[in-house]
Length: 266
Image 1 (cartoon, one colour):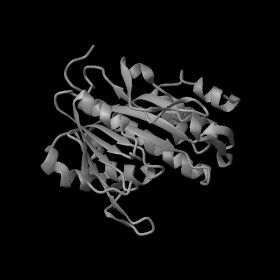
Image 2 (cartoon, helix red, strand yellow):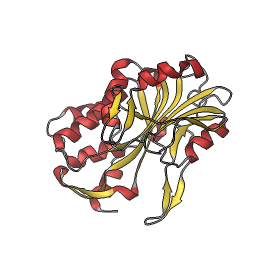
Image 3 (tube, one colour):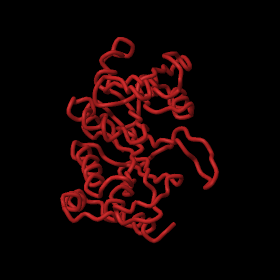
Image 4 (tube, helix red, strand yellow):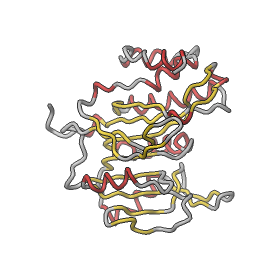
């Protein structure tokens, strides 16, 4: 681990809301501080967090594709009646299959797999839609793109007007397009837990990357409490616009919605 990455990973003592708000509102926010914010785990906010899914890969060795789920009683999905939306499959079903075994109905989405709508298993329902901020087509890739609110409206006939207990988003930079619409439409307020693989962009300016992390902070200001952040060790690159060398551009982040807590607390 290089010095910048090691330093950012070690700065998790700065965890107060006022600290992050002041930092991210500053126009002098540096690339190092931006990385520090993204790598903040806030892990003490969830007493019991489990990783669901993931496969062992090499070079470097590790688990890829896992998603953190908070199992604290006031946060955990109800195994008898839970709803998962999972965006970004890439023919790797381990997360979805484990959430099905946990007891959830899983609706999985990916436009890149060259397969149409089908049931992967009794509890996993696949649609070849991509996530975006509006309904339309990607003419270059011939993908059908839809907003979360549009998808939820169509699928209500299948799962009812339930809260989304777990929303997984792993869509290779498209999160920055889709998340603002989720906020503006009110859909994100109906999500109990949110997991996003976020991507900093080495080809964009530090100002644009600042806007990305400010979007994450706006989600936290809505009441989403971060409980996990892991960098993707297969995403090491040079973020030269941010003044960072040999750091990860992709990070797996997870939050729970404190506005939708259940009644029992430890």
